Image 1 (cartoon, helix red, strand yellow):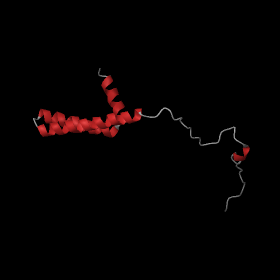
Image 2 (image 1 turned 135 degrees about the vertical axis):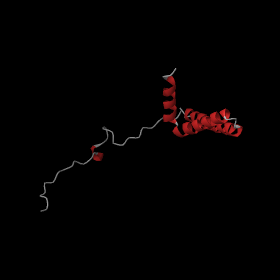
Image 3 (image 1 turned 90 degrees about the vertical axis):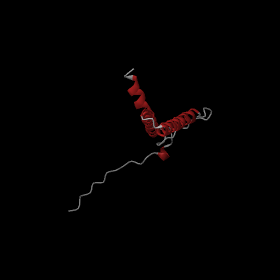
Image 4 (image 1 turned 30 degrees about the horizontal axis):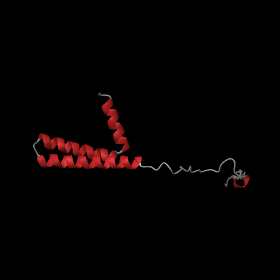
Length: 101
């Protein structure tokens, strides 16, 4: 169990670092408020944690709703090898000049 928790935390912080930091701040506020009997800090921490968890779940839902019907077009940066020689890149030539003195 001890080896699993750091792996989960690292994974969460890599994917959504801002949301994870805000959620951690909310959890710490709720913990401090609960231990010190400061109910306003406890409720504030719970609200912040709940809001950040809601944003995280909303982002996960948006990532899952990628339409599967549309074909994915590949963007090519160089022409394909089957293209005509008219679009081929020009040959570079090295000129042999003497450097200025």
